[in-house]
Image 1 (cartoon, rainbow, N blue to C red):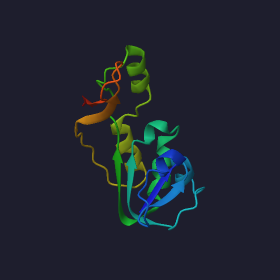
Image 2: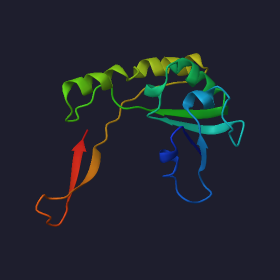
Image 3: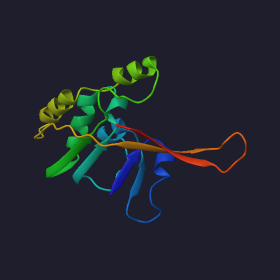
Image 4: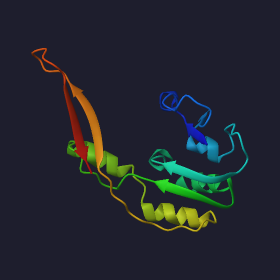
Length: 147
């Protein structure tokens, strides 16, 4: 299993064993052949919450597809186009502005020679928080939930 991410902070969260191989690289670097990967081809690829950071989605999808073995699979996981988190209106609009259209992603996958289907799934999202009361009492453990 290879985990590629440009952030050392993200890669540092990988389990401390030999299973995941950390590769510090962006999606563009991996797709463009500019990242040192441990293999030339892969059976499966998970592209999770990455494509909203990419300028040329079609080129990245195409480059990643070339890394798949014949019959290989690519799963793209994205956030929804709109979110209902308790943020201010400007932040919500900025988020929405950067989210690629899922049907465009499926079209890019087809253009790269992959069979693509589109489905929408919804899961609850929880953010555990630790709040310290002003009076110095025992910290509270709070879970903020969004969908």
